[in-house]
Length: 134
Image (cartoon, rainbow, N blue to C red):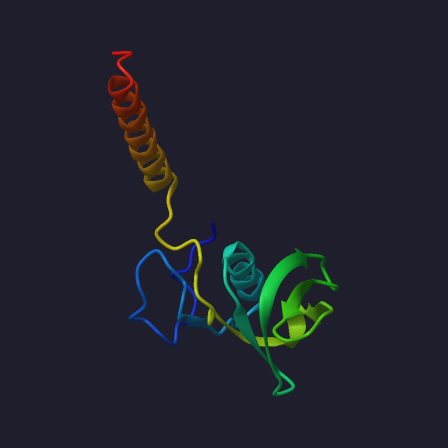
């Protein structure tokens, strides 16, 4: 994942490890590219403020980095088709939707699965004891 420490942040009180609630105001094409990468990895809606004054909220699902033709694609909220937005038109990116992956690490998943397996084994053991097999 890209480093976020160099971006201007409007919401510094957000939770560590989650971008939810943060807003980035990139000042160069390199920072726009970095912020878009963060948004691409984010599992929630983002709100783009465009240089035209328009605001677009949606789920970013694709991006293409090319020298003069870098753009992103997102599914805007409430619309059926996707939208293509050039990087040059982006003024800021806000992580406005709920981060559905926040706090859901691999270790937490493994721990839950291990707990589920133990509970299932205990249940099977209880049933087999009831039937007199153990």
